Image 1 (cartoon, rainbow, N blue to C red):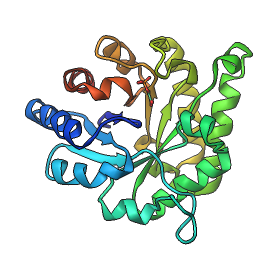
Image 2: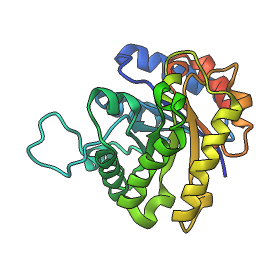
Image 3: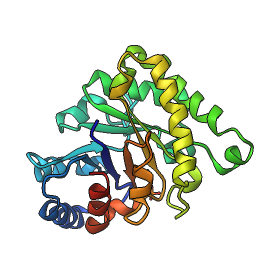
Length: 246
Ligand code: PEP
């Protein structure tokens, strides 16, 4: 299975800087041997569509509504994302769980909405520092993934999972390759028990992955790629991670 390197720009960028960043990536990316994607704020998905169409880089959103359509002011539906040819939608990022109160069930519904629209959800799971210190890591990530398995049933083979320890996101503290691998193996086993095609499911690591530490994380047997925040805002750093995945 090819690895996947997905950038999460979060709430960064503007028309001019996005264009410069994407053009710098396209100028240097060549023919990557892994899958590559960029997830921008929803407002810029049209811009990514015109800059990236026909290129080796796919694009996606950072969220999707749990609702199908209707009176949900400010929400963006999965079918709207499909209009802009999004290949991926991040769901359940820890910043959405933390700042927007997204529950495991809401995240699972979002994953289902994306799948219904033909979009691959990148489902984020991960423990806080307090949960890790209380030895709850496995229980937390299994509970988060179980909600999605319950909602999407056999379609679980069509999702991407991202293990993102909350304490490692944007902090410069990366999980060691061994710490990450341990959790990835747990998630792999959970998917294997629920899926008819577990070999299709990519499990990404996210949390301060950068040009310097990517190769050792990506060499772990159950780490199938990366979800990259800060380092996806710099073309050279992002491309070094892409190359480390090749
Ligand atoms: C993320 O937001 O998904 C992430 C992994 O961020 P960072 O790489 O900046 O830690």
